[in-house]
Amino acid sequence: MGKPTVHDIALEAGVSLATVDRVLNGRPGVRQKTQDRVQSAILSLGYVRDLSAANLARQRQYRFVFVLPEGPGQFVASLHSALREAMEVQRADRIDVRILAVPPHDPHQVVRALGTIDPGEVDGIAIMAQETPQVRDAIDRLAAAGLAVVTLVSDLPDSDRDHFVGINNIAAGRTAALLMGRFLAPATGKVLVVTSSLLARDSLERRFGFDAVMAYEFPEVDVLPTLEARDEPGRMAAIVSAALVAHPDIVGIYSVGSGNKALLEALRRIGRPAGLVVIAHELTPHTRAALETGEIAAVITQDVGHLVRSAVRLLRAKCDGLSIIQSQERIRIEVLLRENLP
Image (cartoon, rainbow, N blue to C red; front, side):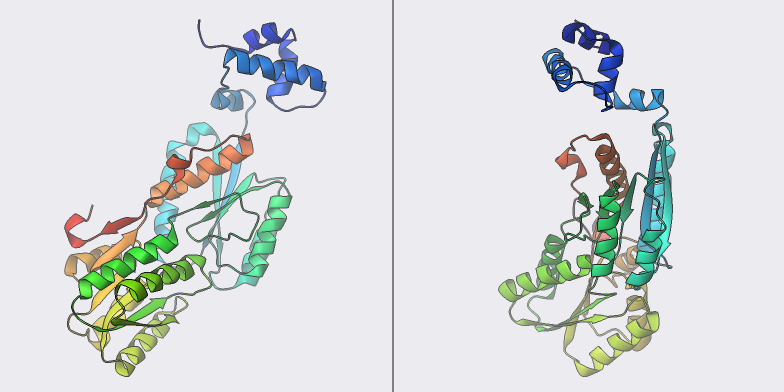
């Protein structure tokens, strides 16, 4: 027997094709008893709907907005590039994506930008933003208006988002600690931790994971409080310089978030302590070059192409009322050394 069709469903349920179409598309005007007969026929026949064909037939267009931080950061630039590439591949799927750039450190401007999104013109959003009550409430309002919402790279778990797309950041921090401790052994001293902002949940979770492993596995190493550069190169240079003067026994630096370019430039200017171990996140042109020269010992990264493709798939599944394949959407932690650079 061939693959069952809507004609088979209509015959099995004893209803018209129009009634089957209404049930499949969730349109009103069908009594519950009739809906139950149609659903029973679908299960009995093992009918699997071809949503791509159905969407094409009714000219279905998916309209998504990616809300990303603005600025010169190379990691965000790689997200832009991966998104353009994904949209070229998925053009036939009638997916329209636009990017809404927002200031990375001003939650009020982020909220204002989210307020420009018209739920009547957009089906879903993917957002990468710092965790603040204002941003959370703005997301909740969009979700309440019927938009699908996924968080990207850095989660907002207390919001009404549908899914998070990104690595397990606590595990990423634990991985960084294990690498740092083993690279440093048997040396002892202090580790400086720098990031853009601890309002970004990915940075906060990485720090939690890092501290847990360092305290348990490498108690002889003293981890200093996190210093925040807020994506300001001058501030990064100042805080790193001051920390190295105040703590001449610093033996490692863990760069939790963005700002790796500024960190590397600061170390070159002020003079890099001998044997300093630097571990950073995200593969960018600057971290790749630093791996090749030995300025960075290891980079913990994630596949940006997988990130954007997963976000689009999850938004589309939410719009279509479909379940997701968890294993397909799991973003893996990757550890890159000079010897295994792709």
